[in-house]
Image 1: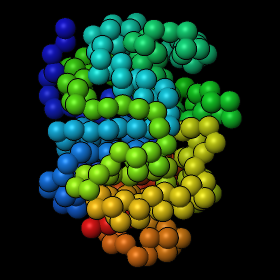
Image 2 (image 1 turned 120 degrees about the vertical axis):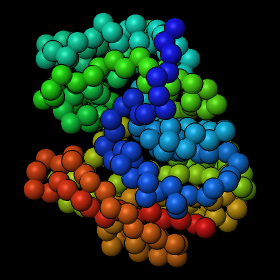
Image 3 (image 1 turned 180 degrees about the horizontal axis):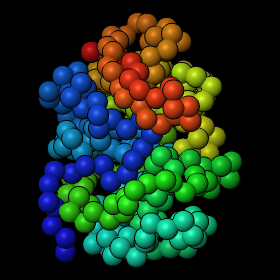
Length: 271
């Protein structure tokens, strides 16, 4: 049995992860609320930081949710499976070719974590067939297995429901007094900054509009909601009737190094 050594930190690196923005986001979020919902779970930085008493965490990425469930339910088995992996190019491509459905739940989670740690820029991207297709990364001795943090994450996840679900499912579960934080795939700020392919099919502008409609419906029901996205004119117009705050994010994931750096992002609030 592994013992948590510190407060939980995201065990996956995710494009647009919120770890660096927590100090800016915290003052914008309600101090008290009922149940916490995060329909685009990703790396889970906000959940792990704010440690709500009750939570429903969802994502359309089935591999992601399977990974979180295994970390929650069998962290020692995940650590054992993850310890068998090593940072090596040939090993990476062998693991990438594995069919996750033929692995145990712990092995499947270990595969997801390993590929995330060893892949280029920590990206999670799939092709049209839903297969992980990010190439091997260029890291300096990355930490593949952190037993203490996985134990801390497992402890934090004990109060959470984990489901594969579309963001719209929040309407069937959230009640007045609850709090929902949306961190969707961002609208691109340039032709090379689109990271919506984390699930087959991507996240189109029509989906952004559906998300905005869901956001407004929550407000009408007395459910407080916050949403992060790119600071682009189209999104400011889409949420023109809502409160919009701005935060500054340092973005390192871009194929053009000249476009990495501090970018403003919007935080939309319905309260």
